[in-house]
Length: 289
Image 1: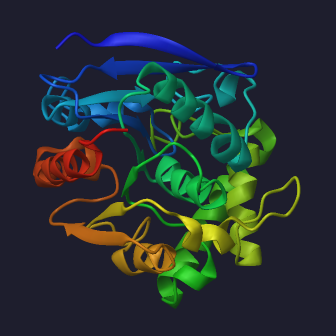
Image 2 (image 1 turned 30 degrees about the vertical axis):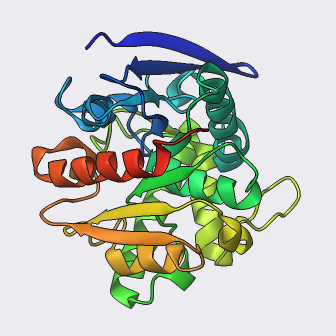
């Protein structure tokens, strides 16, 4: 499989994209992105045999892409790149969908997101139900806010993590994930502040106008397939993801045995979920656009 590279311009940002062409007859398009503190490379591990390649072998055109400031989408946080959650939801995701839709107007399109890009994509579809998207797959999607987590010990652990992120981010202007060996990509202070704000306010509102992202989850019109890792007990526990997804009219949540937050998309033991994703997407997308 020959993987080609593209760039998508979103304002001053240039997003890096890898194209995994569909094998055989094209059955649909998948626009896929990654979690915090990592980049698009996590979506095809091992290279040529990971999640993206599994989908392409099923007849889906797959575009994996780096959120702004991650991977090859520059500048990175450590180099002065600044962005927040609203930029992801209202900038990067709709731009990537529009770009991929323009390349394949004859095919149905799905969004796929891991963690940050997963809940960001779902919330975007809630506020933009008319978007040209026909299905959504999310891996480990939830938000760290009290209404989704009623276990006191786990919530205290989350608050302690947020406090640590904030403490380290303030003097630098970004969270040094690479230096802390918590990931391959640093995150900007503005995004860290978003996470802390949600935890404090028990909600998820857009900074510019106060729009409540969570209030629109019941407007997601597309079917949603969600996965969580059996061993992901803090970052995205099953019950927390279930509460986040509860208002979505058409959703299915499945638990992947032996998987944690990252291995859900990077390790061989999650292949069953990747193949389930491929089959489900073909079923939803393989019809005239």
